[in-house]
Structures are given as structure tokens and as C-alpha cells.
Image (cartoon, rainbow, N blue to C red; front, side, top):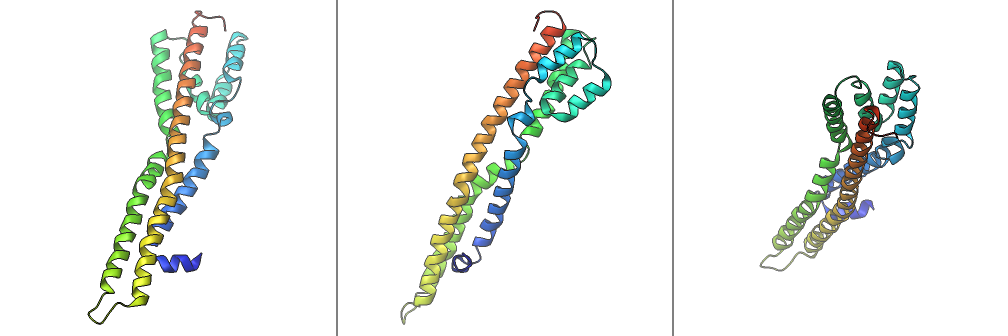
Length: 202
């Protein structure tokens, strides 16, 4: 592996740095965006049950708020349950916007890496081509410099694509996952408002 890096020349180092960041972000998002962590199963029903028993306290709401993004959204509604439907909805929407923004954390960076990695590889290809042409001399080509130029050109192109393809796949996957989480939270928040204001039984 180290011999490949040496053969690829100095343009490979920015690509290696980008690959390390990409892998770290993918792992972090895989852990952070687990459905059980974002949308705990049965949380809404538990909240409704506790509310009807009149056993919801501020400490219970604060604990629920700290445990998951859905808990934060529902807690915003519970803290305004004595207000009108419109105020309750506004509180939920404001908190939901913040939660959605936090769920999208690092996705811009991952998408940027997916977009620029082929360009970084192309830059390495250009550097390799320059070395190939500079190896040409009136007395003939320098085989060592010619081979090194070809290595720089091909390795950087390949490595740029190797980084970009999985980064793009995971970026699109995470974006779709966040969108589905946001829609699900919106539906559960609307259901909470309707139940607490007596429009629905459950």
C-alpha cells in the first residue's frame, strides 16, 4: 500500500486526508442516525399515557427531551400544552427545525468530499501528464520519469473515484434517512397536538 502511495506522488496526500475525513463522518452518522436513537419506538404512546394519568412532571419532560430528537420535539409541545393549538404547533415547528438541522450535521462536508474527490484526482492526473511531457527530451524519453508520470496520473484518478463513489452513496442515503425521520417526527407531533387538544383519542 505504501508503495502505491509513493508511486502516486504528492497529489495523493490531499486525497488520503479527504478519505480519512469521509470514513470518520460515515461512521459517525451511521451511529448517530440509528432509528432507535432518533425515533424511539413507543415514545409517543408513552407520553400520551403519562399525560392522561397526569403523571408528567418537568423532570420527566426534561429527561425525555435529553434522550432523543423526537423527545425534544414532543417536549416542546408538552411545555405549551396549556396554550392554544397554534402556539403549540409553532413551538413544535421551531424545535423541529433545530432538530432537523442537527440531524443533517456533517452531511454538507460529506457531500463536498464526494463532489471534489474526482476533481482532486483529476488534478493528480494533470500533474502526472505534466511529468510525462517533461520527460520528453531531444535525446529521448526518460523511462523512469515517464513511468512515474503515468503512475501519478492513473493512481490519483482511481483513488479520487474510490473516495467519491462511496461518499456519494452514503451522502444520498443519509439525506434520505434524515428526510424520512423529519416526516415521521412531523406526523407524531401532529398526532400529539390532536390528542392533547381532544381531537383524537389516540
